[in-house]
Length: 340
Image (cartoon, rainbow, N blue to C red; front, top):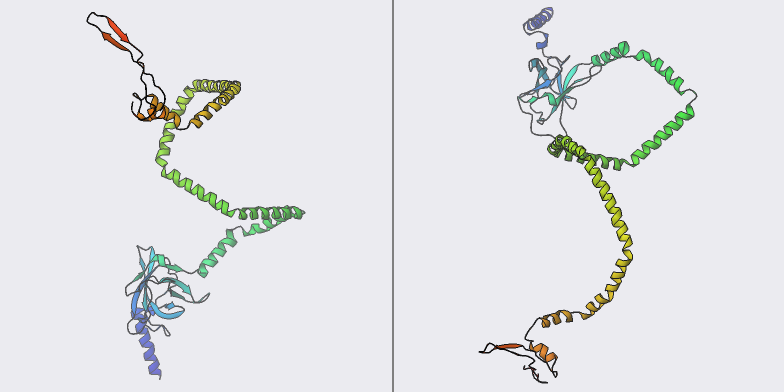
């Protein structure tokens, strides 16, 4: 029995001397199966994470850490994970370094996302964007040390005393202040939609200004020259405005003075316009007849039964050079029929 124990210790010592304690498989580890696959994960910090640490999915050990090395020129740690081949994970799986308890061992937790994509194959890499690390107890103690040693916690007593002095005997005033603040906040909340709409309008205005940035730059560049011209012509502009004012006053006085006469003229035109409306289409037709010669049959039929005198002047030149003028040749139209 003693020889067996010595042999076992010698074997362990030999193994430890060859590969170190980290090379010895820990009892109770995850079952990797007959066909495990390897995945690498990049972490900003791999503090206290050691080889053969557990790899868990939903708090179930499915693999172990096979190695840890530096990557990216020493900017991050690259952790090699061996996972049981029967465990299938999506390609967008995230990884984090967790702790079993406050002072427990570290392990790598793999989390399936809500919307899985693809498959995490052998040789895949979980990049820094998909990894994280839980808050470490060392970080908590370090932050607490900074707070206690130089964080100003000793000034809390002075702050409490000064607040007590400021609020002493002013309870009603503070109560009213809080009530007024509550009403102000309620009013702002009731106009929340208006505030959002105003911000959206400001956003659209900003987008419009950005789209016309070139035109605005040109306008701002040329604006001083335009202002200089306006400043040089300020006297003329003032005179023009004064003249326009005088013209407006004169026009107003003229309109007011001639108002009665203008209204009377409009009233005098009323019967004339009324007669023209009553004439209707007869006036255009009569104008057409007035400009027609000889008169058409429609006109002669309209005056049937009357006499129509035609005055014709004819100049006759005789061989002796004497002019004979013949006038007033009457024409009698028949009372019936349409001939002329």
